[in-house]
Length: 257
Ligand SMILES: C[S@@+](CC[C@H](N)C(=O)[O-])C[C@H]1O[C@@H](n2cnc3c(N)ncnc32)[C@H](O)[C@@H]1O
Image 1 (tube, helix red, strand yellow):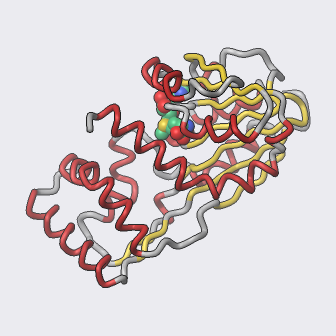
Image 2 (cartoon, helix red, strand yellow):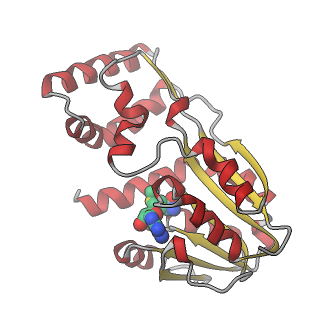
């Protein structure tokens, strides 16, 4: 599988795995009855597709990457309520108060200036409409067992930081939403602890990416092999435990901003 197909599959898998966490939250933001929805940083459209199927309204997706928008257009051909555009989340190319609901999934962690992005999302949302950010992790809350002193810090934030992301965006969500002038509710969406079969499925499908991440962070072949053996053993024995919180924020726009 080439890099492009791998990335499409990865976002698709992430969207499917995390869909049950978003569904109850869609009710809170009244997605079903929204007439206009904007999904910011829509990527390949994996989550936008879910949104478009849950509302009768018009759904617009923007992403700063021309490539992502091209792929999203290929993936979403069947949906007639979707429109896709290139656009920067820091300067959303729409008028103020234009959307009933504005969403983003796994975006703020990667944004250059997340405060500006939330401000922009609030601006383009109408009064009494909702701004919704989902799947924003906080690696500081990560739990892993068994421990590995070399590997754990890499997966607990170092790798994300190395790629330009903010591994601690989760804890900042409330501040970002409150400072954007929104009436704010925050929570953790993934409270379920997976079983070892689920960890194994994800591990096997992402193994190459894990190896690459560990290589990029300076681990030798032998160190990677040793971790793989250790991890596989824990999975086989059924004793592995992992958790890291994925935060969401819902903001209601109750006044003109
Ligand atoms: C991890 S992907 C998530 C994609 C999609 N929301 C999903 O959950 O499947 C993050 C996306 O945000 C986009 N992105 C990053 N910075 C952006 C910005 N400033 N404006 C718009 N999109 C941005 C990237 O191009 C990428 O497609």
